[in-house]
Image (cartoon, rainbow, N blue to C red; front, side, top):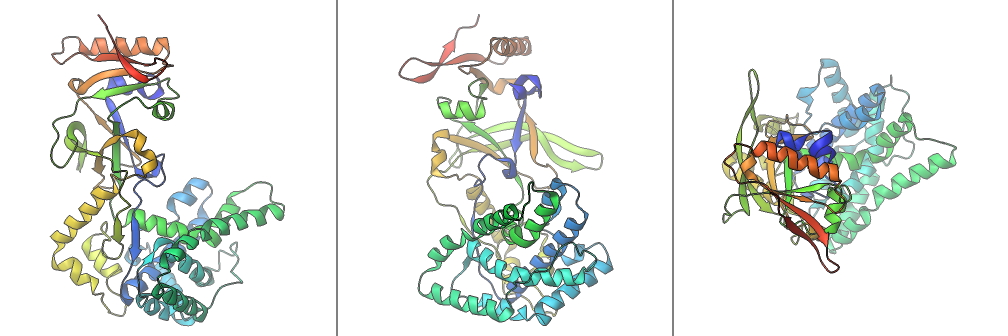
Amino acid sequence: MDNLLHEYNELEEQELVLSSPRYFNDPLEGYQDVFWEGDEVLWENLLRHYLLNLHRAVTICSLADNDEDLYEYAIEPKLTRDDLSSDEYCQQFDAICLSFFEEKGFGRISSSLSSLPKPLKRNNLQQILSYIHPSALESVLEEMRAFADFPNFTNSLDSESVEETLEALSTMMDNGNEELLESVSSQFGPLKSHTHLRQAVQSGVEQLELRHKKHHLLHNSFPRRYIREITNSLIHTNWHTLCFATECASPPMWATYADEHKGAALMFRADRQTDDSWGEMTVNGRTGQGSSGPIFGDITASLHEVDYGSPPPEVDFFRFIGTLPLPKLESAWHSTPDGNTSQMIDEVFEDPDAWREELWEHFGSMSTRKLGQWEHEQEVRMVLPDLSGSDGSHRKVTYDMSQLEGVVFGLRTKLEDRFEIIRILSEMNQGDDSLPVEFYQMVFDGNEFKKVKLDIF
């Protein structure tokens, strides 16, 4: 009711709010089974990109004075060397790469990664980056001596040890054990983080302060966060979804989404079903950006049934870096500073239309799948890509009153809230040719939780 009436007044404003994946109640929403398989150029550029963002993270840690800045800005997946703000930063980053690839001997790692017999999944890649990370952080800190607050690692693996680890991984892949490795690797990050926290407790730390969180980011969680950020931001554009249910007779949903049955459910009319969707709905919202500000207009979007049975879609990361302009993709990911180019460049640029079409097919699958444990929601959803990248965490749209079919009150909806809803809708319907809004009440008759129609005269 805070959303509908009291705080945000969404009923009177005829507003609906779409959320982006970062704010969904299910952190596995939009999960993709991403894998990494590529030539030396692609792997070298991933390691360069890792160093670039680690360089950024150390800089942010030296400046941030609050949690929000630390977690919001530490990693920027779309960052490239050309985006660095000054020649000094470029020179510093170049020196970091020189230290890591040549002085520490990690230039051979990209060849070893490209020679693996099978693709790497995210947990195995995270494990490998965790092995590399101490040396990478050393290279960054050596070039940023002014930030002496962040001590160097003392337990970093040298490049030969990492190569031996990759050889062992290759052998296990040949033996068909990559899925077991992926499962075991999924536990590595949480165990490492837990060990860090236990050590903090044992050392007498009474409360986690910002400096402890900075240390945890740089020394423990960075590889995991890096993979999460690049898979969330470099493959598909940000998106927002508006969630509906085909039924409202699920007590857990009333408990979760309607303030423990004290809220209400809005019933909407959807346009006809098509072969490709459950139906369509037209809303009004931001459609673009003009010289004088946002442009608003009608948006007719499909409503898609959520797929609870299919596994997460498989996505080739290197093939589907889809959110960068093609010139930046070519310069930052498909070619190296010494002039080598990746074979992937031909696959993307030979038929960019076919590449984009396949990318959007992946997007459709990714944005409409959830784990089977959510099947009780019987969800259909509207998905709106944020192509301009300017809609933020939430996006508002408005609807026409003719689309609102009914309102369903919960078991605990307060008398005054029911009265206010009826009053507002009665006033809004005066002189309107649209069909009147019908009212329902959720009841439990001893056997069944169901909605019953209320006669309002």
